[in-house]
Length: 376
Image 1: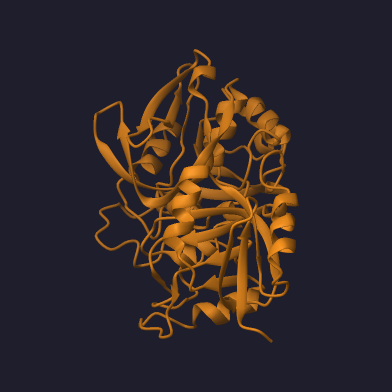
Image 2 (image 1 turned 60 degrees about the vertical axis):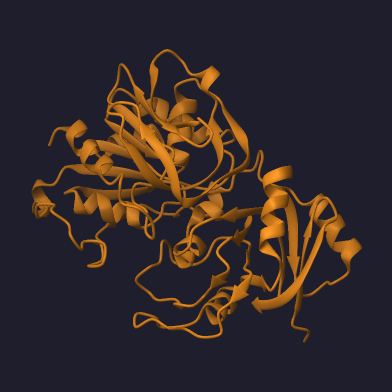
């Protein structure tokens, strides 16, 4: 079998490199992430469903993979693009290497291409549809397949990554995440305030943080109704991250409308967009998205700048905001909305990831703010 792989973009651009991971052909929206570490968390973040992810950091795979740093049970992205795949794993926590991990889960990768040229093209033209293949190596066919692929807009990708059944979350933050923590020990199980997390493709570090802040956590599929949520008797509702376009998710919007004002709400990423849509705002697709671990966000309530981890391709449209929503956080790179608060009801949300791992910890306080909002 050939070790050649090709990445074709919808505009006909072809990148030729070395295949790694699974021998396969996939389509997806080609995007890039500027994080220097955390590739395993990126691979297993369900928000990347339907995307071919390019890492801008030049060497990937040098610290291998392990079972502690997963954000879900398996990778969800379509394909993986790197400049250099490290031939050596050097970390005492590693239990395997990146190439074997992607093979195991059927995810193809391509290495050895000029990722800087690819990223410059995406920054100029915007995120593009693409095809990554180590099977079909015909340039014209691949470009045609890329152009004909479905893309992200208008698709419901949440149903492909959310859980099928409710569950109780018991997992705790790893000892690595707790280094330097000054948090008090959580209350015993019976006295913990109860939170329902609506799972649209939730990263596992989110319920770990909710547990760390003293909550008892019940996870419901993202298709749960308002009646399902209220029947739990929960003290608060969390809206998770997830993949793709928020506007097709009418079922999620209706559920949020049914619990808004009845329970305190905290949303992250897709949850932020869905809460905004439920309140009457609109969303739009960003040119190439925000994906990385160093995005500066200003907290408009106190003037503090937070360095944040982000992964989203859509944002809330500010001119569409209803009068009930107040902007609390703003991206300092492009001025887009990064946080909102409801003026009438106990509800707030942020576009970025305060639970980030790997990533900065500047925004972990938001989980404490949710606890204060619930008042228990």
